[in-house]
Image (cartoon, rainbow, N blue to C red; front, side):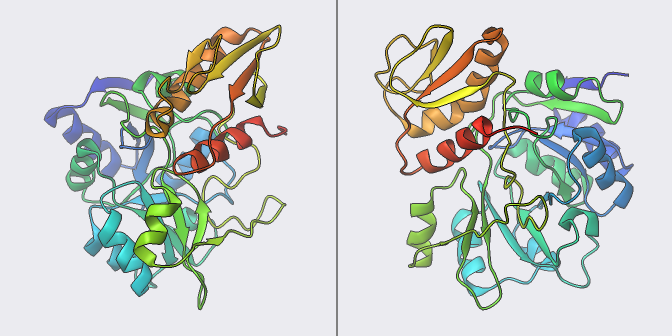
Length: 322
């Protein structure tokens, strides 16, 4: 049975909240990408997220909460984590912090780790859903594991619309940021660490901290992941990608940036990295649908500001696939 795809209204948000309280899955918009939401305190509901996505169970989930005060009931904050929460919440940053022993959040969310990833979304529909459900909501991106993240309700339907586990898709239009949250870890007695670049640029975070972020030391194997988005192959279209393209070759479709010529689609003709981030996943999906055996060539993206996160997603999308 296909999930209901409904425009987000007060009535449909209330229905979605009731579904979540009853252990069902609901896809909903955030300012970053659409999330596949479940009651984070319900083990069976959380397990159904992994099942619906085909997601490895060692890959932890982000839990969406209503605010800083609620987050502090589930995790222990360092002074630096407090500073980032006050600067960027609600918004596109996730903090990976030590779990409190008293938190009701399922251990499945943490993939066996003693930390939990928390975020306060800024999107009004996400906030209304969290408040109406009265639960912390575990919500990775609402797509099959490893595929391009969804930034519109129709992307969710195309990827997960066949799943009997997904009860409802709340349609809130296009996600304004279009790129997953930045994830920051706080190792014990260590420097705050950039676990995943994302919607909040590194430079903005370092300005608040007053010091550089450490780089994540991610194991080359498939275990020990401390954050979502650390798999080598991720965010991938079906078509192969060629990155840093200065030209377009026979049999290729060019995803351009700035003044790229002969582009099938252009992330931002003006070279605006915010516009490029918002368009990235939707344009990858659109070109993938047109590729028919072609390669998608992607123009060079500057490695600064949001360009760091865009290039991270593109490198993972182009990585060899298992």
